Structure formats: C-alpha cells, structure tokens
Image 1 (cartoon, rainbow, N blue to C red):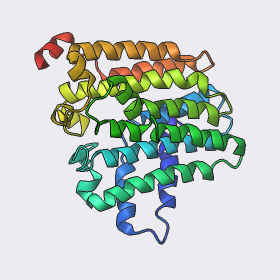
Image 2 (image 1 turned 135 degrees about the vertical axis):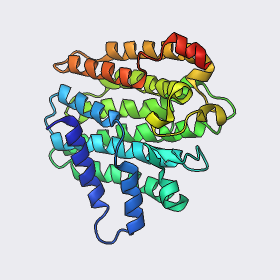
Image 3 (image 1 turned 90 degrees about the vertical axis):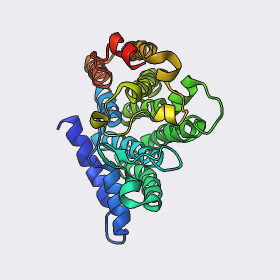
Length: 293
C-alpha cells in the first residue's frame, strides 16, 4: 500500500472513532472539516518514510504515529486560524473551521484533535507496548513546552524573538517529532534522526515565509501577506526574499546531508528534494524576488 493511502486510511479510522454515537454532530463535522481533505501530508509521509527506512516492523504503530503527527498539525492550523491569532477566513482552499462552524466549535475541534492524536497512538501500541512511552514523549515535545508548537505560537505574543527560535518551535519541532517518532515506531533509536527533522522543519517555515510574500493565494488556498500585517517573525521580511530563498536552499542541503545512512536513505533524500521543489519552485527566481521586493 502506498504511503499516502496508508496515511489517509489511518486518519479516516482515527476520525471515525470520534464520530461514534454520543458525539455532538456539529463538533464531529468541525473535526472532519479540519482534517479532510488534507494538504501535502508531508509530516506523516516523513514519519512513515523514516519508519520504512528503519524496517517498519510494526506498521500499525508507525501509521498511528504518523496519524498522531498529522492530527496535531491539523489542530494547530485550526487554532492558528482563529481571530485571536491569524483570523484567517480560508484554509486549504475553503472556509477555515471557525468560519464554517463558528469560533466556539473551532476551539473545541482543535482541542479534540490534540486528545485524539494521543488516543490513536495508545490504541495501536499493543504489539510493541515498550515503544509507547518514548513515542508519547517525542510527539508531545513537538507540540508542548518549552519548544513545541504551543511555544512557537506564544512567541508571536512576545515583543522580541529570535527568528531561529520561532521557526524551530512553530514548525521545526513537529518535523523533529515526525522523523524521531518514525524511527522509534520501527524499533530504532530516534536521536540519529533529529537533525533531519530540525533542518526540514526550519526549511519548511522559511518556505512558508517566502510564499507569504511571493505566493499565489489561489494556489496556496489561504491569504498571503499575513506575516507583515501581523508583524510576525519572517525569514522573507528579515532577510529579504532573495536572502530567504538562499536560506531555504541551504537548509534543504543540510537536511539531505543529515539523512542517516540506511537502506532507505536515497528514497528519503529524494523525498526531501521533491518536497523542496514543491514548496519553492525554481521559477521563483532572483529576478522575481527583486520584483516582489
């Protein structure tokens, strides 16, 4: 089964558990709206790719880890779109959850997705119970304190912040969780995969900053220009668009170098190259960068 098929099936099964009798219908609808249809699913893809590179001896657990990572990512998007943060009307080309279902249900849907992520992980660990505790710790560190998504969101409320600290918390932490969780789910050590997640996460946030300046909202499925409007840290604002593209390219190169040698290393490097081209196509040239600035 292809990785994307595995991911979608696992997510569908996880969401279905929250739609059993007794769940408020509007809340169930808001949760489903937040998860489907998905975006690139790069985080769970990365998690599964690392698990496969490490042998993937417990596919149910690696799929649960990948699902948990994506559910947490979706929860962060629901909360990020709220009026108290971005107040974004669109996500993935359609109404954001709070525009479609109201602010109260959006808050509850995001909270429910966080809980569902860990329920999903716990429910699929019967074959490898000794791996559950380290998986929980790794994935929780990607979303919590002191340097997970919650911290990244909180940095937006501070008067001053290091761009690197912000990007590593807001985006990098969950990428690190994805690579390390993939290894641990397959019975391998997670630490050798930390650097890959760190570099990829920072590169992904730099790409998001670039596209917020030079992207097309019709293609991105969300408004652009929000970083400048909300005075948020941004590689494109701090370094200029040309500098941000160079920064992104450097991080991608570091990510490729950081892939540990294993039987699936070349496929992983290929995935990194493919994703980098999707995020910042070569058509975003230096001439375009100068024109936008």
